[in-house]
Image (cartoon, rainbow, N blue to C red; front, side):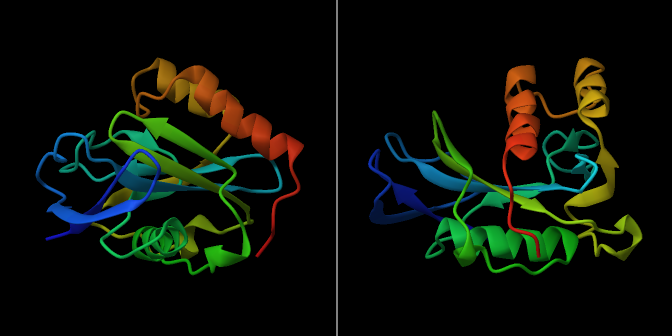
Length: 171
């Protein structure tokens, strides 16, 4: 069972925790991370969520999840990337490209540039059914067909725009 820290609106741990499967206690916030990987062609590495998961079968951003109790976003990002795709990266050498505040917490987004071979990824079968590279047009097409997690189009465009406008750390 995953245990998550509860944060206040200032992004400070309250010293309290809760089980991930339960609703977050009223007034509490949680910390989420997303890792976005682009290749040199400007394509986004996307994953298809395992069927049994919430939003199962839908395509999603590269990887992500909730930070566990005691983890900061750098540690959570490293763990999620290793668990879901079998890749190891020390995120303490970079900062999140953006943080999105949502009703139940904070979501740190880390952007990386790496040319990866899909068949060399070690997909976590409990979380990920498949992975592939997709252009902006392909991602937006999947979104319009209801085959991608329901992000706002402008939000996905922003991620692609950030990739186009920034020299990311390569590893």
